[in-house]
Image (cartoon, rainbow, N blue to C red):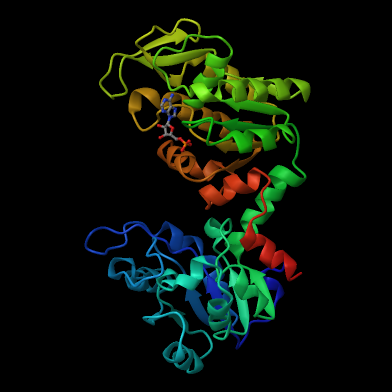
Length: 394
Ligand code: AMP
């Protein structure tokens, strides 16, 4: 795979696929510029090199139709504010008018195209639509890791029609940290997995068992493992149909000599609210009507200790219902333990990212992935079409 700093882009029409799938309020104001910021290093580099920069993204799920609330137009203000530079918006992403506007571009100028998903061909990875997109440019650059797990015309088929294709810096970081975690990690390598459901993470656990030295399980999903091991878990989250699977996963860990840690105590409450009465108990003492909503202090100590000697840690999923203060301690203290371990820390996006930010520890992590679903599928060992398309180009 080539990166943007390994190709010639001066004076070239560069089609940059980004993830500007930003959240918006009802008035159409962008409420977080995080995703736009994530592509700024690539954008600035392309502009400094004298590219004619054509930026394309999806927003929401308009299902192949023009939906006014899903226009990318509001992003123009955000992007031009961050770059301190004029950004021209085109109200489509293919066609004669778009080609004409691009034909008039000068080096260092930026055009933002309208939502790719207004065309049905985008999500279908349609060859004809990809050909139309490819006609706009000389060079293709992909910086949209978050959609790499879905083959779309703008991240897959397009690469067949553009001679020079490369990854931007955001994608480069994702690729390099993934390799640090899964291809040649510094060992011991630990995976800390939490969140709500075992069923969402079976593929992940099965794939990780083949690679890691330790697996640490917290969050709601831990109770399915505990239940499978014969504990009464009260009203804690438990997927009855996953008990067998949970036992099999643990058995496989044993066979592979992977250290497999489950909580030994829990913070419990009769209901999942911030005002509920809270107790700590051992996992074999959870009363019938109570719910385990966080790992307890003995588990925090056990897990933190297990992280002390690791050289690489992959973390996906909170240790408890961290959104409510009484159940946030496990997640926050484990975030601190990851930071203190000095290990290379690779964090899955989504809830884990939110929790680490709440704990004020984002800067202490080595890498926080920008793609929740894509990151998980990659860790599961699946091929990501967006990455594969670039790799095919050499
Ligand atoms: P996931 O998207 O699978 O990573 O799940 C994240 C969600 O799991 C968060 O919203 C947490 O509140 C929730 N969660 C974590 N631990 C528990 C628990 N013990 N009981 C219920 N929900 C939990």
